[in-house]
Length: 502
Image 1: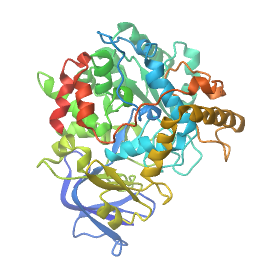
Image 2: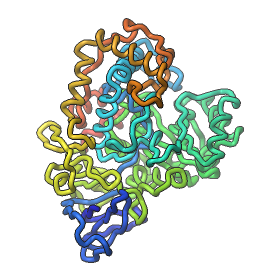
Image 3: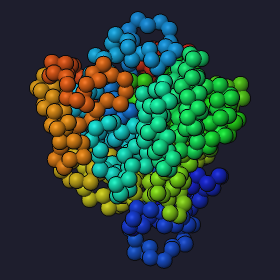
Image 4: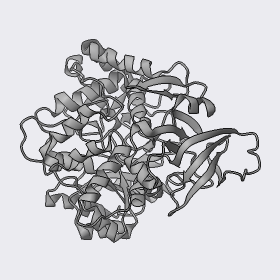
């Protein structure tokens, strides 16, 4: 059992407990939230941690592609105009060499280390649940953060289905219609781009009856007010990824119309090649967009809800426990941020990775200041250096360290030829054994359009996989990344404002 004491932002509308405490039971659930001096029965001898900041629900990133999150931002050289469809840029000349091939090599040759690396990147930004687990091997529940796609909560159930590649035939959606009818969620990319014809992708969802509560629609940048009204009527959710949309297409979803229609809106940071480091920074992109409007669309509290209560609502009824709000019976997923602003909601909008003091997943401290990690009982944590910062991260095993994770990935970078041979062997063994077989190699496979479509069949030769891998990206949002952001003309200068949050 664990007690966190500080200012508690529950994300119930307007509810802030200035001198409060969150009580986490042995099952990793929230047992109570009370004023500081009201201790519920059974917690008299529980471990207590004075957070020294503001306690929020852990942040939820409801759209990502984790396989690619060690990679830098990507732009097609010499392209002068934005793309207008998701079907275009995956065929760009540099896409394979700079995006898909390096990610494929890392995923096959060092899949376990890569997943730990990208989950560490997420938790450094206060994320406790992230959608976008790669295909291939299924990680254990909550090793560091929750993988929305593959979280089993100790059962054998598959609560969420994901479809990244858009289909144009109703028959291809039949398996998803069956699973949705069984109460499982569906995360589905739709109408990504600005080309009006992309609305046909959404029309197909309407035709087959998939626009319903279980649907989590990704992007929707080409959708109009009538389409967004259909999403609201069906009780579905829409995930907004403004950075990626602006980076690739120079435009983003009509979230003002979506909000007016009553759509449940969430945020997702997408992926490394065209996204922010984490949803902590995606909130800032939403804030920049919001302030650029003639009249603001969102309050600061509503911006925070995009990464807490709203994705929690999207998962309500799909996951067995509530998430995204701090309330009795909800998952014990929390983030503690230093207090830099008087308003607690504005505090999160303006917070940076350096303000993340503690991250708790399932009642267990996973990342934070070494002193708080020790106070919270994280006995298997190891140190991690972030520039001049010292933090601790707990992978649940004293033999797993951040230094070891980086070393395994750097080994691939140093000798891609040998790594490619290892990757081909791992892919062949993975296919032969089956991903669910105990002892099968831990292999991550692409979930984005890819020239190497035969990866899952162990088809590529080592020569095809032996490609240079870019340097691993820093976990902190730094000046170099911000300068690269400013250099892309597609967003019309809006994303340049991110430098103002440092």
